[in-house]
Image (cartoon, rainbow, N blue to C red):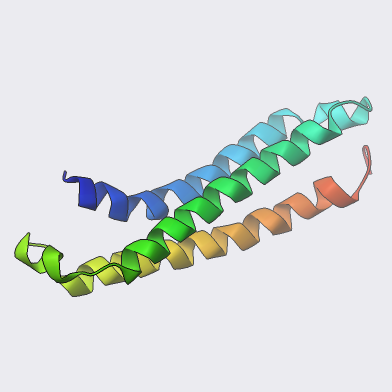
Length: 113
């Protein structure tokens, strides 16, 4: 797989993976707030997932805006490159909103409410 193909697949794969990893880690950290400890750890996990997802979205958007004339010569049609890059950016934006929605209870509620 070429470097360009890996870059095109990165936003599509990284955003759902960041959401799933954050959800899995926060599920493992569930007992901690009941003991009154580690509220910042759960927030740090959500913030980290948001940063990773935003970076993946920006990568997808920047790949979409690049000059795609060279890709047609390398065998990748320009339309496919733009479509994959746009799909990565839209998917990242969607998972960004999903991560915010799942982080709200952790950030707004205290303890075991």
